[in-house]
Image 1 (cartoon, rainbow, N blue to C red):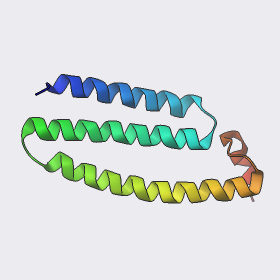
Image 2 (image 1 turned 90 degrees about the vertical axis):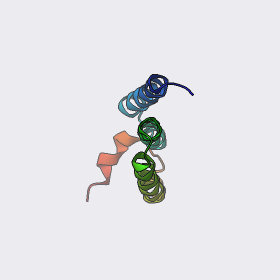
Image 3 (image 1 turned 120 degrees about the horizontal axis):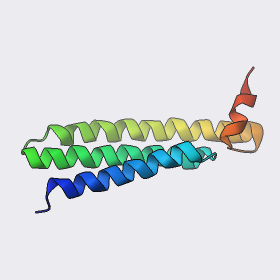
Image 4 (image 1 turned 135 degrees about the vertical axis):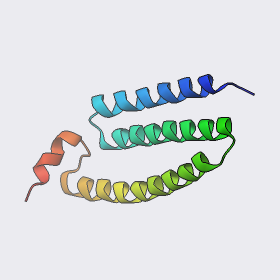
Length: 100
């Protein structure tokens, strides 16, 4: 069995990649994918600690996080489609142009 540190290192690397992607990208879909990457890094941490401690609490949290992420994906993609229909672009810098 792998030790806990290796899972935490992989999780930290994934979370860092997601954070850098959110802060540096302008495409809304890429930002959305980076947020999902950050959520999966947190899920990996929960599962690693759950297995290390021998209880299932972390895996229950992962189930709820995945449920929220699925709802987020549905709502987010609907917003992207509406934004694209109005502006023919999904660039985040154009988002302030949607003011009434």
